[in-house]
Length: 357
Image (tube, helix red, strand yellow):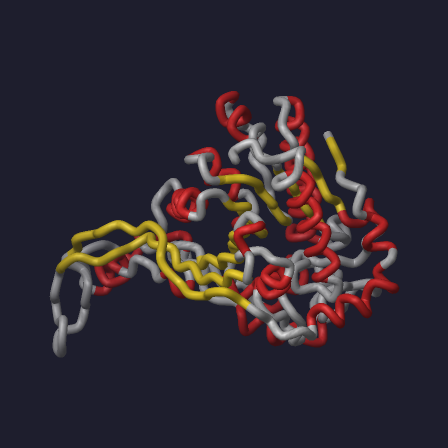
């Protein structure tokens, strides 16, 4: 198993690097283009489109589009010099994850664009602007199916988020070295929305949509976080043609892969990143992180043994302390972004990477 340590010097010099960060991020943002579009989707014919008894559409059936994925993008000037980067959010969130931080600082979306990368932000299928298939809810209301067929809709409470995201050992108590801007936690809670993945079929269409987007972009680096952390790998196992690199942040890894799946993943550079305090939250939620970290170390070893380029970037081992689960919003988020950008340059765009170019 490989551990990525060569960028430690960058972080250890963070105190002297802060002025250059400030100068770079204060310049006007110049882009070549921006916009949005959808990937995927399928037509579903249903008689359960409206449970209303009066008004337009009362009792109507017909065709609807479901399982599509909304994508917004910004392309910098001369952005064709680098691979596009696709960022996908985690549970109970949307692509707002990657935008301005809860305390108003620059997020990874803008920073990656400033670093010359075309950035594509996706809302998971059945989440936020991607919409979701509401026909089952309507069918229950119309009495066509029993309420027991309704899937669970998950919403994370403030209390669960605080401990699960490792802001501190107990609600409203922060770790002394906590990097998340806890004074702005209320702004994070506003970002949290119902997780409707229970309405999705198996396999999750977000995986297929991510793979299709990578092909559409003629090659891309896929970044997943938390619930979507292993989605880039799932997308590559569906269709690796456009997946140039994978960055998986803070998730559980699958370690029961078939030989042909490992063979596919061994041809794509993979970076996994974990923050701090993995074993410092008590109770059931606290036990999740050591388990996830263990499975991902095993996954890295499996891919490496298969001849692949897989690396674990464990921040505390690199001397970077206090990072939460939401490390793209932490106070040192731009320094962490530079670590990822450096890895992409070395392993995807440099001599070490490019298996699918």
